[in-house]
Image 1 (tube, rainbow, N blue to C red):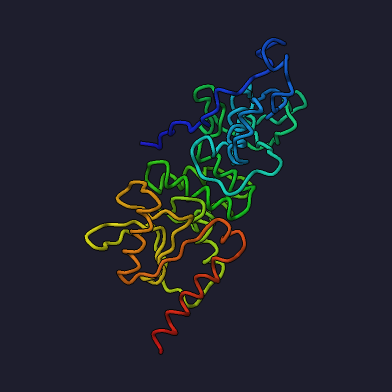
Image 2: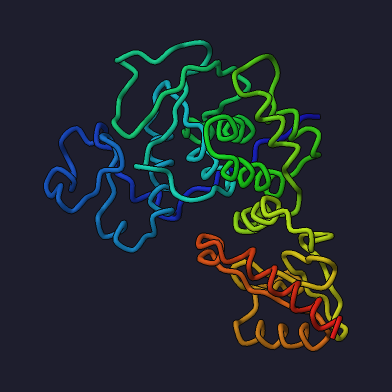
Length: 311
């Protein structure tokens, strides 16, 4: 039995999208266009909605807008991954959406309907795209393959790790569907990235942190485990990463406790329990990773432990 397509993960504000060709000159947009923001030349959204959103939420909406407006093209890459609930690293430059045409078709001037899209002329078999609920998308595995071919190593690893975590199925089937069959440019790179991926990362930050440690090649690190359950004071906590069996790393805060989200106060109490039980804990934010602080934080903790042991 093959892998099953997951349900789409659409933005909460998707029903606010306005498809201009369908209005034919009627509607609020034409009366007050300044009250709207164009996500594509054919799709707008009220400015009041965008005002309360982060950049990644706007890109999520743009992905839905393009996928729903496509007539013959198919959204792939990072924007398609967002709509499948797959984690991506960072924000797409200039909001450009990657598109493919089914089969062996190449994009002509008639196909190029927007400035914020980029066409790729590569084979797209019928088995690797869908029009689920009216959204024309590459399958999750094809979308991740295209990320691995065209985007950075880190972006690819984040997407591969996330797909393995959020979509149920055996790893060997995920591997085969991401790699694909036949020959294509970049297949060796995709195969190498699949070998570097690790199951267990539950957020892009965890993959990013693991990759920074791999690149640092610190001789002080003897083991790295992901999503580890530890027992403290008759309670079970799940933490993002354990280094060398004693150093806990939590990315972006949030100690997990029995699968439930707890208040910051309770999280602080549980951190206190963990530390009192003899564990060392580092809390690592997006800024720590982006500014290159994470590896020095780990190295300092390791050396401090070594100095204490030799004192």
